Length: 106
Image (cartoon, rainbow, N blue to C red; front, side, top):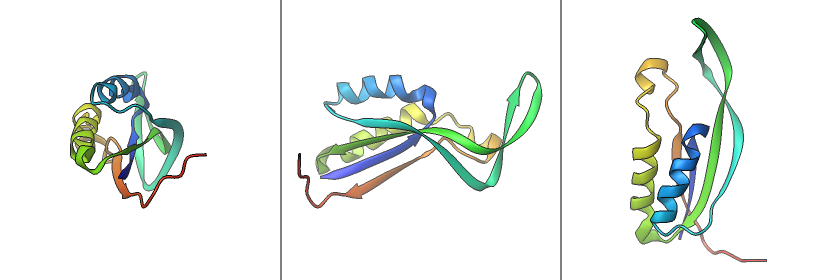
């Protein structure tokens, strides 16, 4: 079993949830976070450029069987990549795949 942790742009969450449900994912957790890095991001608002220290992301966490990991990661990549990395340098997020030794439900 693996834990998939995806840091995505918030506006991609609803579409991604639908696709993951279609894949058979029955449970997931998500929450907002603020990311910081040394590379400052430029945002545009009403024709004005702003340099932003923190970027809002949504973290999506789910547990999947080993056999489903590649399919789930591929869906996340396909739906959540906007191609903005070349423009801003910041990218669309990241996906971590973490081994889970065991799960104990409470």
